[in-house]
Length: 592
Image 1 (tube, rainbow, N blue to C red):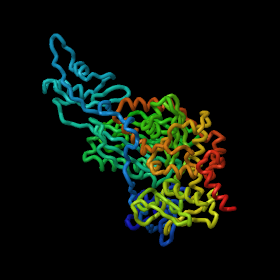
Image 2 (image 1 turned 45 degrees about the horizontal axis):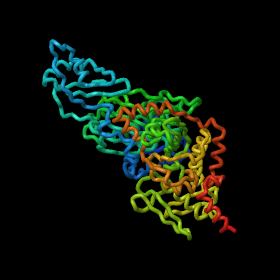
Image 3 (image 1 turned 120 degrees about the vertical axis):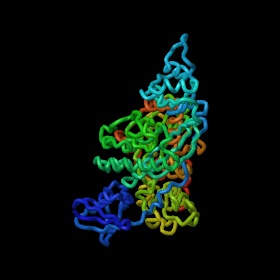
Image 4 (image 1 turned 30 degrees about the horizontal axis):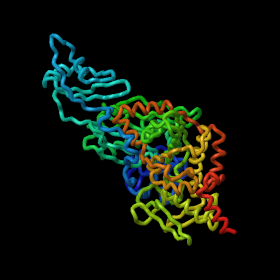
């Protein structure tokens, strides 16, 4: 078989003739190659040097012995700027007096038996526990019980798991020990994974860490990853990647990961399938049915989480193939599940766009294919929101450009928030027309070595059009207008950096008073946290998933009409954007 030697790692591997270079790299244990298009040959991000010439690793097959040089990773060490934190109102977070976590330590004193009251050790223990739910225990706990309740005058320490089915006493120890219970809340995003280490005794968040989902090397969006995962080997590869990311975060947060005794996971339907190694292909094939939804409770060793192997792992329930547990969990960070008086709009804007409208009495959810433009993919100088990314742009009257780059140094590219801001400025200054075409030239220089083209702007306009069209259609379906929306919640790590004025100017967000918009950050992580520590919120999650009506926009012919109308700045119907209309009037005045 031909031998492929990879530089600069200087690792050689033998592979059958006809093997794509990127698969040879995987066999050699090299993970640096990125395939944002999932190996379809459309993104050009997997360029390598093969025997002195440049080639795409996903499209070049091994025929004879090769030497392949992989360029230095350009992704700035794949670091996420900033940490996830609670941006939601304190009212949605459970207080310390209302904690009922998935796992907790209970210290009891069991009264001794007597001739008059000769109840069993188990019955006396259950009585002191005061549980409102059914209680069970494995045989090992029953075997330890008699000695434990007698050794320290009835003082015992219990490790108690709580689920919808009841309580499970996982351990019993004599005496009142000083053990503390730790848990972890996890949000598996298409682009990033975030985790919080939680003290389950008092609900304190001890640490929060975020990192890029290693799966992005095999696809920038969920459709690409579903296509990539067409073989058991590739599903195993993607599963290993996300577990590597999660377990790395866990090891960063906890000195002893085995001390983590419970986990709650939120993620979209595809991400959960890939985490569990399940076949995801039917999520995108008619009639769009996932393998499982909701996911039953599992144990950490089954999932592959590097915490205590017997730790219970629960998952936020999804609603449909494209409205998953990250959205139901995210709603816990809003008033939507508890307020019956007002109507709310929830937007999770990222690689995918998910939308929910309603209140505590009714909810309608849908998803749109926003695409990875906001993450920098498909944009010539686009990049993720890492150090060196331009995140804010202002253009003066004489077309002078002022920008702000993350980290304050020399810009290396432009990220999603910077793109939205730039498009709004280009339109405001009349540099582009309503279709996103430049009046003069075909590109615009933002900074040295950073420029955007008409093709870049077209990708961005497609993304904003998909989001606005989905919102408009779902409003139409329930017979409401934009004025009926009391508050718009903008969720997601990317959504946190969107400037409302810029997003309205390009027609991505509705033209509502700015005071009606609220940023709630990584709401999926917030929801995973409150579900980890609160039975009330776990029950509310189940109610949300059963109450919400899922709408498949792909089967509605009106969606394409709404999408085409939104493919202009800000929209073909200017009456929808009265605050933006003066910009066009000023442009027309200058042209005349």
